[in-house]
Length: 233
Length: 207
Image (cartoon, rainbow over all chains, first blue to last red; front, side):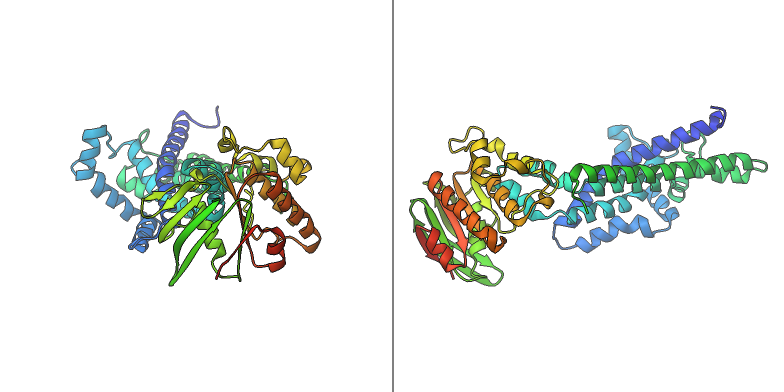
């Protein structure tokens, strides 16, 4: 398509890849946190809650710096991941995905936690008395009843990831073709005299992606509402 | 003995103790609200763990603190009709009714689909969502769901409480039919003396 240059396409594809991997990776983690926060009671829960929410309130630059401390190749965690899984994050697109995942996590946990809290445990008890074990109860009752929260979490997480800037530039740097996602590319183009056209095109792209995510989420929520009952009032 | 129950439950600061045996047919647990009747049903269903005691139904030990037996709810094969019904809101009436079919399949106590639908008069409700049902209809679907799950015994918690006066007689007749036509032991909770005297073979005062 002539609307976008080759390098702009590359930026778009990279952004989508980074966000998709970030959301895919944080979904199970976020669900686990949401489940623990919604259903378990234990001492220190307030602390866990605060820790999960930290990326939401910290300056993103600080989050990026903390990631740098934890995942640098000479840091214990970074070295461990490099040695066992061959995963490196610094100056790699995987680093951009990790930063986006961490920044999206609190929003995803919040959305899913609310929806899990709204599932009536008495319905799960009923399923158990009807012969369903824990797993079938979870997949047939709990999961469908909090599906809307999971959709909402995916969309929120995607929107947050696609717009991630501070933690990404601090942790994974701003390397064209590797870690330069849409917001980073817009920032770079703003530094270059005469690149207003590119800034505009990339900004429009950002708006379209965010709008698309919103419309998709509305559609998903409506569709699941229709499936579940012509009765929804 | 259909039911042989001796147990203590801890509810907050209170200790509740129960002991009764009952023969076949319908056994009513009768007592004022707040006496712990529902807690007792929950314990029999495996939803509430007793502090100590023993629960034997139809010769099968469901719980025995001494012998460290504690069957999971899904292993107890009880058809529990909750006072608040607990129909699954995201599933149609038919999907609700078929939810327990897996366990019913192969159970020697399994009741036939048509038989239960005809007994309860719910053939025309199959495509509806639970939220669109009237109180009496939802009550019959909840009973149907329990009957179709291959239960070895039934637990009915105040099945007439959420039904208006006009539907009361109808549900009462229905419970009599279930009691007489199906050879299932029934544990029935109520605070209404007249209802209990009309239905029960054995009356167990609680509280």
